[in-house]
Image (cartoon, rainbow, N blue to C red; front, side, top):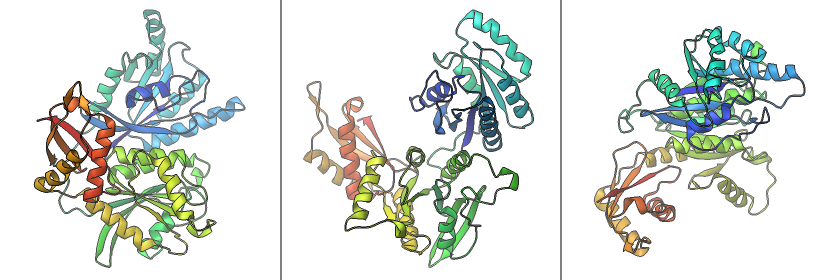
Length: 437
């Protein structure tokens, strides 16, 4: 299972800037106004050949100081409970504040490894001022500038030293049962779907968002179909009643993603797809997981002749660029199309493990290359001579050609669409590599 790192700290210390640097992309909004991160941001980072999940805890825009303090405290508690390691960010330019002190008190009570990152150390004077942070007594302390990137390498080295080495993609256990994770926002009907699929009240269902806490694994073996269902579920303890449900559901979903072969992304037909759902969807595709989108509560949606068709079209526009995913309109309450969900998830699982012979691949794909020639590169025609499938879990294909570095995205997309059209790869992310022949 993957390793999860959460970045915690008071507002405006540069958490989102560090998050963007770890992901090597500008995903979180960065601003000088405190509290701009409202949505939880999450993504995948890799360093020294090790891959891990990163979560940027956001703050709220407060009305009063103490609302702010309780919100931050709440998020830190959740991060401490759920993540494998914590990056605690502080600001050398401002120095130690009361909020930092109260966070230290929380972190000291946990047994999770804490990496103290003193940010904005970008000149010798700041370095001198930053030495006051040694008073917190943490073993792992790093002076860095998340804006320029200086010092982040040392932090990443220390973090990855904690992690087990990634298993190579092509060493999946043979004959292991398919694992399907039910993911989605709180209160869209994940537990009810699990109960409908297995035909019994296995998980506790209620209308309170976030009644579920721990991942529950259910072994399904009916109608000659066998697999493991993962529901991020379980009853929450009484004193957790007011905690930040969305943040819990995000970390749980990420953990379930790491375990699963296929993700069943459950949406509420009456609410549509949220930014959080799109984030989880793109994370699943980045991790090479199969995806089936389930639109629940379809019995409650107002319908005209083409409602389903139009809904699916809009949905796929939001999910672009990866739109070749099965969309099933269901009603858990009415038990509508529940069996179709199981059949489709198994089909996606089979597609994810498909092995295409090299002869068949070349026969089909070289014909596709002949039909639509690749653009000319610096006056030379791009020639693809040979295609083969690589021995990995995620369907990956190597195209051998004369200018592998010059193949542009539109042509790559054309080849991917041809692979999808001819080899039934719906719901499965595929990887394409160009190599020198």
